[in-house]
Length: 276
Image (cartoon, rainbow, N blue to C red; front, side, top):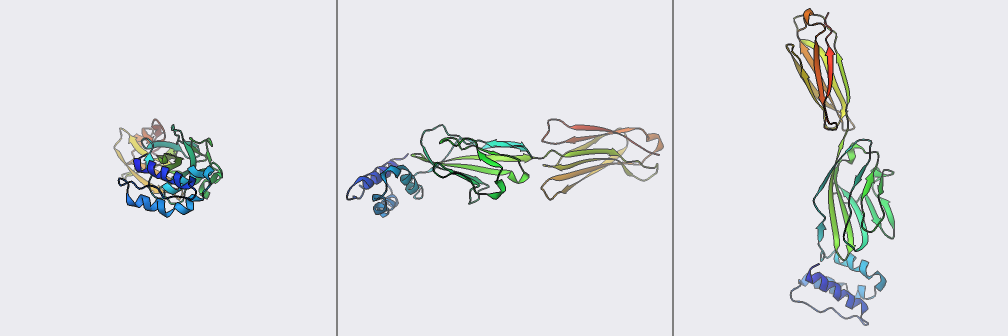
């Protein structure tokens, strides 16, 4: 804490404990605006309950920006699957008195949850109702657990601790939500002919992000792939393998490979052509 902030706290304490209250001493090294904050609030805080002095000081100092917001460590990046649960960490190692904890998503003004030692834990965003909880209602652990994850839970989460005497401490976390696609691979029965037609198809449905589909074949063919978005935010990927079917190619195989970031390896499907 800086010299001016320490001096401010000492000044407020002297104001609260003095009868009658006396104005704090000025310090030429401290900004004029700081003293305006102190002097403007002198009469109000002179009658404050001394037992709640620490909370009073925090509530007064933070709006006046005498105590800066400190970022705790580097930004954390987490990945989880739809339908599972995730623990988003925010834990302090410093000692102090917690007066307020809140979690904000994507820089929105209203927190999604808040915790106060006297008022308890409250969910303020109905999208998280019944799905979010505080891991441990302690003075230094603000980690939250989100259950039954949805795609809309993806985003940036900010944990804000208000602690006396440190002030505001902040932790940033980015959460990525993955949805494992449902894979379908089939051959397409066709008649021999001179026109290029689909002879096999691979689909990766309801994935997030979109899956990658590739083909392996010794035959003279090519493929086309399209993506379509679903209303829930997932993506369908459909790929067709095309060629000019010959009767001599009946029974030959082509391989479809579906790769997705939610899995460690590709799924390979060997498809036997049906050409009549």
